[in-house]
Length: 185
Image (tube, rainbow, N blue to C red; front, top):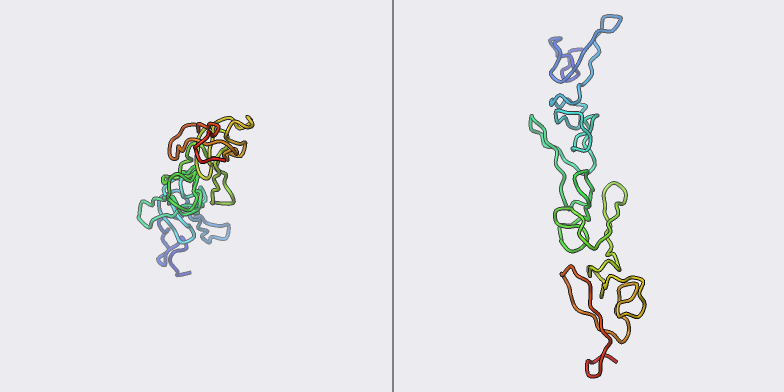
């Protein structure tokens, strides 16, 4: 044929980024070469290698959570906070807020347990009983199994107790029994 962008140009020369060979009948068969840093029409990306988990797969498709630029030397980057977990992110909770389990740089924060759902979204929950008061925990004394010590096994303040307000401080809550005149009945 006389069409370009299929491996064999209209002047019958092998196009850049393609590998062509002759069939038994003398016709040309051309295949795109992945990993040569030349993006051809059938490739989603070509970053010059066949490494996986760098944004452009070993089959020259854009990997989940990445976008690739159109530069001649193609680079692929992930975007923290887009809600799609990329291979260079520990978590991605669809925001760039800190203190919610997944940081603004997509790393898991202390005191949180993050799980990955289908291709992307991350869900983080506070770890009750680890001694770090985070998220919706009213207290966390680091003793999840100790009953009636002021901080319950689900990290709520036991009736008749008060616990230190240590928001934003990575330390265990200190709880004490209420005393006369403290406003706790």
